[in-house]
Amino acid sequence: MRLPEDVYDAADARLAEADARVAASYPGERPGRQPVHTVYVPASRYKTRLVADWGKQAMRVFIEHGDLLGVGEDVFERVRAKLLTEPIEDLRIDFEDGFGRVADDVEDAAALAAGQTLATTGGTPFSGIRFKSFEAATRRRGVRTLDLFLTGLLEHGPLPTGFVVTLPKVTAIEQVSVAAEVLARLESAYGLAEGTLRFEVQIETSQSIVDTDGTLSVPRIVQAAAGRCSGLHYGTYDYSAGLGIAAAYQSMEHPAADLAKGLMQVSAAGTGVRLSDGSTNKLPLGDALPDAWAEHLRLVRRSLERGFYQGWDLHPHQLPTRFAATYTFYREGFPAAVERLRAYAEKQSGGVLDEPATAQALAVYLLRGLDCGALDESELSFGRPELEKYARRES
Picture 1 (spheres, helix red, strand yellow):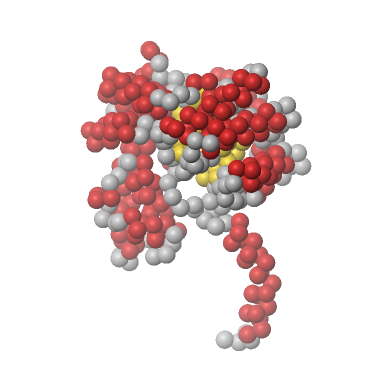
Picture 2 (cartoon, rainbow, N blue to C red; picture 1 turned 180 degrees about the vertical axis):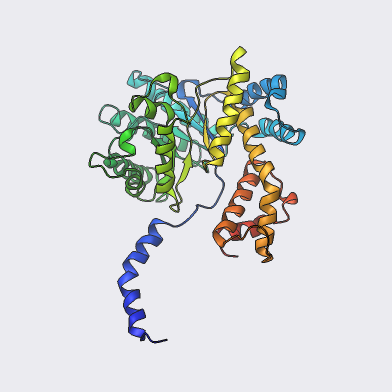
């Protein structure tokens, strides 16, 4: 060694600020379960038995047409059990496009009623509302709806675990900053702990991708949320329409969609902000069911293979294909994932030389399979605590 100690000290001193910035900006994958989908239901249709009704409708079409899914008996039975016990993982009560513009007193009453219903019903591991955007025309209405919803909710119980709100149609970074400030004020007003209220941002405008000065907006959106951004959700049809893509070609797999989602992925990597793909509006109803199911199966699988582990579902008949595609994805891949992780753990040599980052990805993949019901811990030869250590890169 020919370098004196002061060279090491100088490097540490010069990079101390950068070290702190990187640590704060990139804390890594957020621990805990991520839902495989978000179900959007207009507030006008939200009622006490909604989750049960969706489960019944999904089960009915699954029993009648489940052979069209082309899955094995194991996946078939797991989907059936899921529809019986947890047909909706994440419910978003929609006061935006799905609700429309109504008289203020109508939306006031709906917001209070929806909060009360969620408090007394629950029924999903994750839940929340989508309020109107923070653009000038709808900003005050959106904030008022969120405030009234929280009144109805918190007067009848605590804030549900997994509660998150959705900020749509971002056209300026400042809208995200103000949304974070409003949530902080709501926490103070309702006596909630600081940082309790979090939001996901819908990426459904061109301004959410590229700002007016040509810079990328997505990483700035994450930063502007001041730690409150839990997810970035791609909005298929608003985004496509905003780019001038003809209605017949608006799709989750359009090249413009892939570009936007690629930038979302790069911007969110390592930040703890999760990603969700969008939806397909081809509903599996009547004679259209076989083709719509085939398309949904393909699109869900496509998203999973590209690292988007969540998507939107808009109709009960999309639940069988959501879970069938998701379960097939994990069940097809878990034997090889277990073998690779075991080889890494035992430092074996083989056809694939994996690094710690790959071991982490393998563990996260298996944990996702466990969380959604595709896998059982008994068939993995790794316990959850051990997988969580690999996911945190502690092993």
